Image 1 (cartoon, rainbow, N blue to C red):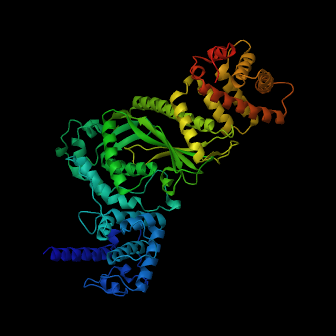
Image 2 (image 1 turned 180 degrees about the vertical axis):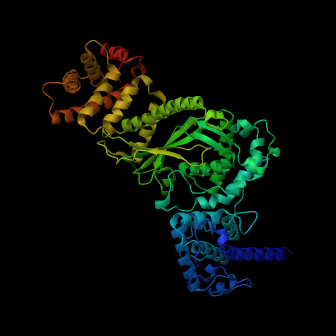
Image 3 (image 1 turned 90 degrees about the vertical axis):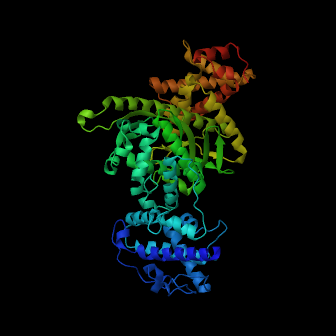
Length: 614
């Protein structure tokens, strides 16, 4: 009896698959553009979506016109060619996932009859959209993957994967109706995230999966408004019974939300599912695991974070910094405490501006919260100018805190490089992944990246030192030395004019040891003792050299009838930076000096020999 039932179910699957081939060729199922018919191909007559034309495929058929068994060598060759074409259109990740091909599978390897039927269906989608312009073609391919045209229980792409023997299980939601809805829709749209979006139509920060009517279903919308925490995202409707709101009115529920990271504005209930599901996938990409299981876990975490944000609590969100002038060998990812540095992959295009020169990503976990929730203004009189001002102040503070963390990492990278004092990464882009924003806010410097800094080269032998330095600097760098931090970084990476680099470097000296009167004596004397604590002759020579550099800097800043020669400025600028970098290293090896209450106190401790210099 079980065998008969299995045969019946298999036949129903084949019937539905054949129906899919027919159904997808209806103009009603294409979102935009016009279908002008398909070019006949001996490779796959079934692309026209009829059982009669499916008969022209080589190999035995069942009574539905679908392939029953694996075909001849010519059939296999045809299928191999079709899979190669599908890879070009969809990308290999999507094709292999939907066809449920094992990781060991390679082009040319045999596939099952069910998989060959799915190849036919996928190719029919491509043919249906071939005459469209690229944006509409991609929009329709994504739509065909995520819509439920064949089954009422799963999307077309999910149906094909299960038909091919793959699994699309979802975790238990333990009575959480919001999470249950999210898991169901997440399962349906996941394959579409795997489609490769062509460079020419890719939009930074957008995964190209758009919401459909299910994201605005009455069940889901009412579940959100009933939720003990999510309901606070829409304060105007807190006293309203969700069951009493008609669907057309549910789709109008909105609020005004401003986030600490600068995002915000109108927040619409029907787009909540879109925000949660899209940002969950972007989070997977950033963490380097885009698997189906990882995506579902990310969806659950996003919902948990959204509930925390709705009730005024802060959550940790990934912030992605794109760096240039850096190379990593010997490791794919370098993990620090609360952050990671890794190579760029092709999947990272979603968080990077198009055409940008980014060679590595620094991923930080940064605290973020909502700074304002209120009713959406219905007229000009309802505008919340004070709320915007408050949000702007919070954003400036958040951005400053983030830049401090980034700069501490950059300084740590520089201090860890024992081969040169000039290595410096250049920050190109910045992206915060907000669980309540499905489209990312990507900021970047669109200028050509140019720097006089040496490339930071990280190999396997340097990783342990880098991890140690990142831990030290991010946890211990004093705010009193923030000027030295910024000036060292700018002198190495940002300055093109050598005189600017020289001024920056000497300002870093002064931030470490400045006092008055006799500033140059105190600064140069303290630096000489710090860098040459044992050898008096070397200390004396270094002190003279530092005085000369200080004099060149003063001539530039204060003006002089005889300007320093360009060669002198370049030489002194490079040496001044080397001294600043080495002095910072020495401060970290002597914690008492690093944590001095002021530059003056630090200088006195060194000059009077009150601290043992290590």
